[in-house]
Length: 279
Image 1 (tube, rainbow, N blue to C red):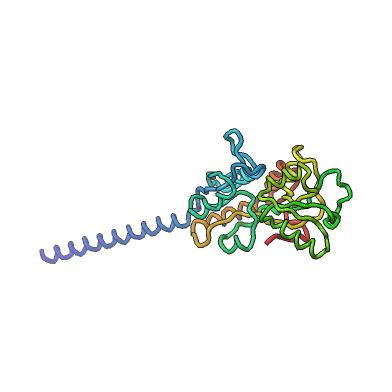
Image 2: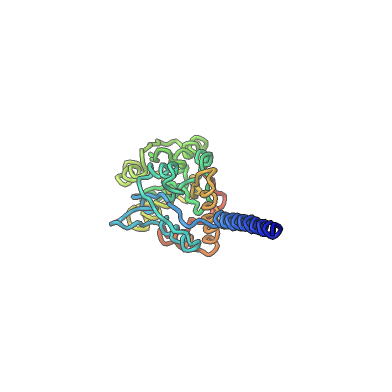
């Protein structure tokens, strides 16, 4: 009888051990599935008044960035949620964890690369010399010698043009403005003969009759545009991989090209040959 009880006790213990092992295995499998599961949502900080990049009009969020993120969502199944604000607030959303990335035509540069990981560039937008339509004699950068040229504070193109002017002996009066909006108004009012300006914004404004001007063919510099993600964050790394893969597919299938043609009348999704990439 004692032998039977002993055998029964051993059997119960074995079942309990097996059960615990099985439960542990199930839990581990569940954890592994959770770890390998792709992200389902991304929060994007984007401009509220940055026409045509990202802006809110009559309560509707519009812009080429919105179209790009809608396309990324369609390709990946990731739900996109936007938080909007002035440009100066966007990186604050990212740094505080209130957003996963910034979608506002962000240029990759050394300072930003030191702090953030970037997706593959989805656009290469030049900064060009923009002149009034009647300045038909200006065909190259050096042709502006003796004139007044404006650029916005912190502009990669503006700072590089200073260097180009010095190297090529271009004698020019350079005027700095606190924002691209103030620069645009100064140009529109004829306070400057030319301006160093985003080719994307210039193309949009010329296309929509908001700017009577033309762009000099020669690029001052080209900005590689990409999405920044916080370094050392596992979820950010996953999101970056998913977004980069989607960008690569959208370049191949022409989705990005169509979006830029829609907004600007030209394609900025491909890197120009011999481009001087801003850094």
